[in-house]
Length: 445
Image (cartoon, rainbow, N blue to C red; front, side):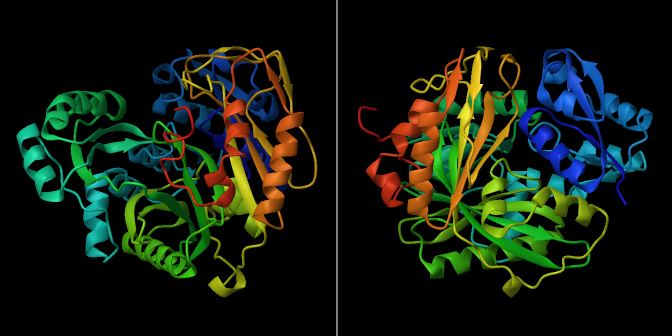
């Protein structure tokens, strides 16, 4: 049994994990940088330890320092949250080598799925459909040859990449030549590997992912899908469940492919299998996230499950108590990510939050990483909170969302709230018939 947990993360997700631990009587240990001293998660934890200067390279990515804190605090387990070290196989192995429980899948699975080229190869062998593409490419001449075989446009992507970072859209041989070396360098800088590959760019596709939950006894379930097509800079800003317009036939294909992926790699824990769905509803695997997703609350809203609780239970080697038919989605939910950024340029907006007033009500949930008086620094991702609205229908959720946004007050920094309000009146979003181009093609842009 896990009685004391170290959270190797910060901000909103650290606070989120602490809340579940409190309900379960599990003590929590936070680690924080000098910049995060006054953040809510530091105050919420039972114990908190300073681990370094503000840059992540000097604090939240310091594996050995975090392990030392875990030993000093006598914890049983480490939860990595999302981002930072959550998909770092080396860190997961260090946790296990220290005699601690790692709240996540085996390090070998993290490594396998973290390498996008390797993940593609595994899925092809498992008969999971993948986006047409390539293995690792080392020269732009080779890239041009393959791109002409696949057909433009193509995405040049970092094999170790994620979060929309390390990819370039190319429409011609010239584009590939221009982007190849810089994409390799960017991949090396951000992910420690210069490996890149190509994928066919599926125009006007939908980005849909399937939440999975699997235990260490071979049981695996899907927890339905999330629509994640509203994106800026290839990063999600709105997610909803269920997807508002795919057919039931396509839905079943996604579920089947996601569970095939889970069994193919011997996965356990909470994870997400991500797909692109084209205009003919062909479904293609793009990646597997071997951790909790930012958008997990929308799945919690329609299933009534606490995914952090089940991550901990699976880490304790407990078996899932349900069959797939026991789980049925209830109602609808949409998550809106609130970012400290300019709503037009999407540039980060660091500064002090003077006013942070959030509405309350039935079906309104906020997972926030800040409070009034906190300073948003340039060192970390600018997401400050997630607004999750749920209800009996999508129409009800949209109505609640409009009301909630009129009551919300965030002052002192620029925030993307005006963009979210705009989207709530966008005809494509309201109808549910939108794709990944919705932001790029909105009126006046």
